[in-house]
Image 1 (tube, rainbow, N blue to C red):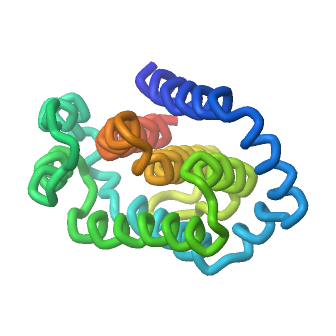
Image 2: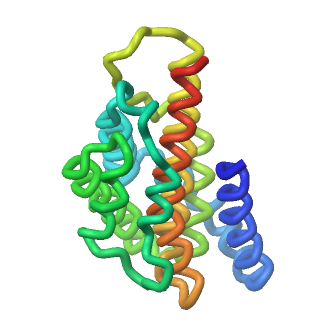
Length: 209
C-alpha cells in the first residue's frame, strides 16, 4: 500500500506540472522526439553512472538483516518541518535500515550529479528532466541488476530488479523536481525516506517468495 501511495504521489506531481504547462510540454515532447533524447540519455555517461550508483546502494543491503528492518522507525525519524535533510538526519534514518551509510551517502551524490549534469547539458526544465529519466529507467529495467550473495532464483532476481527499477525511477523524479518552488523540496524529503523504505519493503517481499 505504501508503495502504491508513493507512486501515486509522484504520478500526481508529474500530471500536475504537465497540465500546468501543456503547451510547453507539447513542444518539449516534439523536441525530445527530434533529438531522440531518450536514446541519448540511455547511452550517456550520466545514465551509466546513475545505474552503477543505484546498483551499489542496493547491493549494500544486508539481506540477513532485512527481517529486522523497521521502516516505521525510519519514517518516525524524519523531521516533519525541515526543508533539507542534513547528513546526520539521513544517517539517523539509515540506522534503522540494513543499508550501509557510507555507500548510500557516497552514491547519493552520484545520483544527484548525474541528474543535474544531463539536465544542464541539454537545457531541460525540471519537469522535462523528471519525465525523461522516469521513462528511460522504466523502459530499461534490465540495467538494474545488483549483485547479492543470495541463491540464484529467477523469481527473486526479477523481484529485486523490479524493486531496484522502482527505486531508481522514483529517486530520479524526486531529484529532478527538487528545485521546483514549494513542492520540490517536499517531494525530495519524501523521496529520501519513502524511496528507501519502499525499497526495503519490496526486497523483504522478494526474499519471502
